[in-house]
Length: 69
Image 1 (cartoon, rainbow, N blue to C red):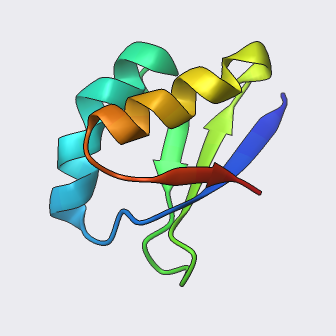
Image 2: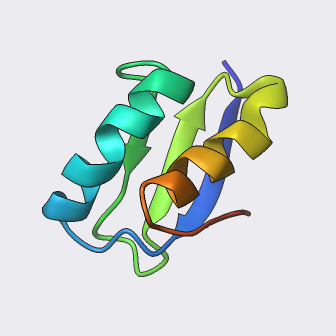
């Protein structure tokens, strides 16, 4: 399964809760994870394929930033 990683400014569990509906709608429930222990706050999305820009837009819609790494 393909995984794509994004550097984000999602900082805490409250931020994750805010972005959850947007990412669930775009990537699918259970197909993404934010590593809050990583200083880069890495968002990993499984099987994103051509949806990479849609993931970035979903994160931005929630009020955060995401950059593919």
